[in-house]
Image (cartoon, rainbow, N blue to C red; front, side, top):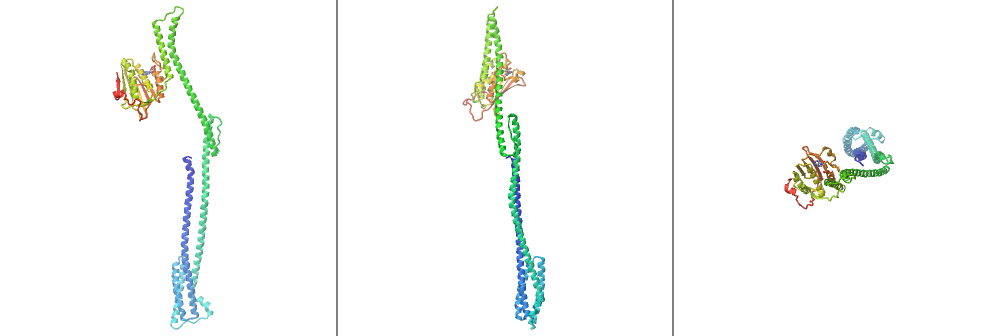
Amino acid sequence: MNHRLLIRVTAPAVAIGLLLFATCLASIRYINRLQANLADILAENVISLQAAQELEIRVRQMRFHTMLYLLDPEPARLDPIKQDQDRFEVALTMAHRASTTDEERKYVHAIEAGYRDYKTEQARLRKAAAEGRPARPRAAKEFPQLADQHPVAQVVVPCQELLRINKEKMEQTADECQRVSHEGHLAMLVLGLAGPVGGILMGYGVARTLRHSIYRLSVRVQDVAQRLDEKVASVSVAADGDIHALDRQMQHIIEKVEEVAGRLQQQQRELTRAEQLSAMGQLAAGVAHEVRNPLTAIKMLVEAGLRARRPRPLGEEDLRIIHREVDRLERTVQGFLDFARLPSSERAPCDLRGVLEQARELVRARTREQGVELIASAPPEPVLASVDRVQFGTVLVNLFLNALDALPNGGRLEATLAEPAEDGTIRLTVTDSGAGIPPEMLDKLFRPFVTTKPHGTGLGLSISARILEEHGGSITAANRPGGGACFTVTLPAQESGVRSQESGESPSLARRAGPSSSDP
Ligand code: ADP
């Protein structure tokens, strides 16, 4: 699954998950706060309800003892009234503190005002009793009227009202608690349902995205299949978004691609074979051309000697010409054989400075003969490459001999071996101060049998190019701006840490000249 698809699939899932989590937290916080508030309200209500109940009990007792005294005004009956008053006042203080609403405060004030009147009336009765003029005893039938008219009634009524509103408040709070509890259950139910519903939606979304991707992939596969159809027949796929079908289609495509690749390989082999045949044809044509000239010369001389009329016996000059042409034929055939059957190379790590020195030794006599100055330079450190010494030596000798051919009247021949470059290649240049390569030869120098020399075979450079190619290297030719030819040979350097096969022998080139040496 690629990065974009992964984001497209997981991002909504993560977003919905986070949203659900945040909603859960918010709901739990809200319900907790609601419950905490209700608990506070409930605690307040309980205190004020208790205060109101206490007050109501005390006022009842106070009224009972007051009515008892009025029915039977015994001075001893005043004492319980005094006790009732004390308890009532304590309860009144509590009710005062517990009252939180305006309505409660209104009733508490009314109770306080009524109680003040009651206390005044009580003080008057006490004083009269103390002065020996107790109140007139009342008949039992007067009791209802007395209960209603006495100042204690002004205390009893607001006390009952206070108790009533506290009870109502308590009921309201209980209802509120029930409502919050219901809401909590509802919220939990919603959240409980939101999880599975979110999961289903998410799954649906993921399935849709995947299906879409599979569909698009199928379309692309189909496109590839259509293109393949141009190469191979009967590739059929359908873009229906089914992953198993897609798998089958991919398998089918792979088989077809393998088939196409196989065909391409076959074509490549056939092409290479055709190229080889073409090269062989060119080679054969070159050989035929090279063989025909000396054969024609020999045939003409022999025919002259065999003529029926006035035969001309072959003289010494004729035999010399025949010998030279046979020699030429032999060299051509040998060159062809060398080219056609390049012996398999025996490569081993070796210091190219040594090979360069050996090649120079081989052409030393000719350089002296022609008065050519041969300057060879190489780095002081070994220059290691995995080469066949004999074949690489052949390349160098070919280049030196060509340069000497280009310098019949003396001149300068330079061979420069450079240190391995950073890209791991070794570069060797061979330059001369001759006339340079004829421009029309530049693009066909390395083809076999291409020569400008009267007795040349045109095989030296083509054999050299093949040898270097087999060593993983190359050769290029160019004319120098100042005149003369320049051949550049490149070879892959031997990896460091490998000793050359010369068993530590330091080549005389480096030993003698450090960076360079020259002949004659
Ligand atoms: P051959 O030496 O038998 O001609 P080569 O393949 O070695 O065959 O060379 C092909 C041709 O390349 C030569 O005939 C010559 O024209 C040209 N050539 C090679 N080396 C040089 C050089 N150093 N200067 C000028 N021309 C060269």
